[in-house]
Structure formats: C-alpha cells, structure tokens
Image (cartoon, rainbow, N blue to C red):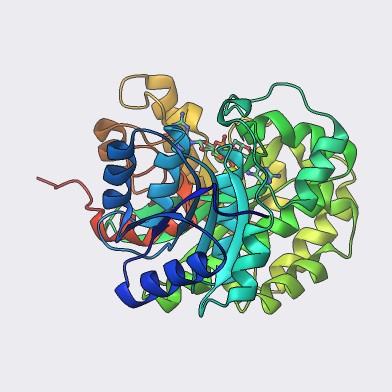
Length: 400
Ligand code: C2E
Ligand code: MG
Ligand code: MG
C-alpha cells in the first residue's frame, strides 16, 4: 500500500512515544502526518485543517480528553475514516473500544500493543481500505436476521454496559448491573428489548449470557485493580436453564475470569419462571450452592410471585420500575412498593429499587428502608471504562 497519499493523525500524550510512532510512519512512506498530545488538541487540529484525515492512531489513556471520548467525537463529526488504537490497556478493554468504534461507523484497523513495532504497525495499516466517508451510517437498523445475530456474536458486537447500584443508606456504590447493547457494525446501537426475545427463540441467548458474564468478570477485575471493588448482576433468561450443565459452565467462566461466585448475582425475570419447573429449580439451586446470588427481577409484574419465592432460593428482590415510578404520588404504586419491601424483609432478601428517576422517589424508597437504588437518578447504564470516573464524581443527595 502507498501511504504517501494518506493523511494520518497521531494522538499520544507521551512525547517520546509520539515521536517514535511518527518516525515509523515516515519510514513506511507516510508524508502527511499531524500530531496531538490529547483528544482536545487533536480535535482543534482537525478543526483547523477543515477536512477529515484518513487514519487516526490514538492512545487511550490520555489527560484532558481520553481516547474513548475522542473516538466518539471523531465518529460523530466524521473527522476520520479509520482508526487504530495504540495502547497498553488489557485486551478486553481494547476489544470493547474497537467494537464501539466500528459501531460508530469508523473503519477499525486494529489495536496495537505497546511497545510498538514496525511489523505491528504495518499489519494494522495494511487493513486500510479507501472508501467514501459518506458511505456508512449510524442509524439504528430495524431489521436483522438470525445470521446477523450469529455474526454479531462471532464478531463480539454484544457489549456489556453497566448501571451502578448504590446503597440508599450510605450512598456507597456497591454493585453494577450488566446490560447488553448490540453495537452492530455500521448500524449503531441496538437495545436488548429488540433482540433478546429473538435470541431466545433461536437458542442464542446462552452464548450471549456467557459472553456478558466474561466481560463482567474482566471489568470487575479491572476496576478492582484500580481500587474499586464491586459486585455485579447479570441477567439470565430462564431458557438457559433447560441445560442443567449451565451452573457448572457459569462457575467455570467466573473462576477463569478471576472472580468469586459470591460477587455475581443472576437476575431472573419472574414471568419466565414457569416452563420446566423441575429443571429450572435444579439449576437455580445449584447456582445458589456454588455461591452465586439469585435475584427476582421486575418483581410484581409476574403472576405467581409468592409461590416462586417460597420454592426458589432467591437472595434479592428487585422492585419493578413501573412501581418505583410515581410511587410518591400514586397510592397504588406506593402500596405495592411497601408490601414488596415488607415481604422481602420477612424472607430475608436484599431489596433493589429499579427505575429511581427522581429525588422524590429516592427519598421515599430510602425512608421505606429499601437497600439499593438503581436508576437514572443515580446513573444511566454506561460502558465499563467509565465506571471508575463516574464513581469518583458520584455524590448521594444531601439529607436534611
Ligand atoms: P432489566 O433487567 O429489568 O433492566 C433494567 C432496564 O431498565 C434496563 O433497560 C435499564 O437501562 C432500564 N433503566 C434503568 N434505570 C432506569 C430509569 O431510571 N428509568 C427507566 N425508564 N429505565 C431505566 P435495558 O438496558 O434496555 O434492558 C432491558 C431489559 O433487557 C432488561 O431489563 C433485561 O430484562 C434485558 N436484558 C438486558 N441485558 C440482558 C442480558 O445480558 N441477558 C438477558 N437475558 N437479558 C438482558
Ligand atoms: Mg435486570
Ligand atoms: Mg428489571
């Protein structure tokens, strides 16, 4: 490939590494190379240039504006055609960034580990395919086939986002719920409510759950290495439980991911708990025996709650957001919330209020003694790499 006609932008905060990268590019024949020490400077340089560049080579861990935020600006403003990530971060994080960049419609040339070598750089740049910047969209695609879902699984396009759960009493961040998003290549982000039912029908949801569990363990370790030890919840479809070997598989994934089962809670949706009762109870009991937590998700929306609660060794009850919503002003919702909390307390279950969106809902649930808050009032689901920064800035509301 002839690099002489392409324009590159190198974004790297370490002077020495930036210079080394530029020198390598020039050795490979590049003639037009812009440089910046962080995302902010890079955006300024692109604005000054007034035209997109062909390829951006970017570090992730930089002051001012980190690489990930920078990449999203690049994509939204169509400032580059292709990107390569040059970083010392661990592979699971690099993979997430690559997938996000691809979903934003950027051509991803790859991730190059540090220290950088000429061979790695050449292999990465060799993937560059000239094409028009206007040809890729970020619109959410409505139609997809089973083949698209399978390809998405193969290409690791299903990424876990994480929504914090905090203690009502102390405000402390204790846990996160993993919520899957489909970063569909060239199509944007697809919500789980759109593809989970289809995956269930097609028998793909187990593979998805395993991937989300792996990603969750990788982030739990990454956050812990940077000083934030959290627990996590992963959603499981009841359909996974038709396979009685699943408890062992989940255990192995968590062990290989360097986590303890005690830190993972599986959220099971209540309405689905029917099906093959014996098998489902078998799996739930075995998960519990291995130390995993079990949460009854969307409590109150199913129809045989009490019976299920007495049969299944649940450890947590999640009040559905339809009841949290407006509980301060709707007596019916408030009654359901109060009764659910009372029931949970008597059964010794931890309680989580889902969908806490307002200060009034926070105050009410807190005064009723609910344990954990989850909802937009605290934070929206976010990519795993944002959790540490968010947790640094999070302050619970002042109590009077
Ligand atoms: P869920 O497990 O009940 O998750 C809570 C949903 O409520 C999430 O939607 C979350 O983004 C949303 N939410 C959180 N706080 C608020 C709030 O304050 N207000 C409002 N209006 N919504 C809030 P999301 O991410 O779209 O997920 C929808 C459902 O898809 C989940 O409901 C869960 O049942 C399913 N799901 C998500 N990820 C997975 C997965 O990995 N596996 C399986 N089997 N199902 C999943
Ligand atoms: Mg859930
Ligand atoms: Mg729920």
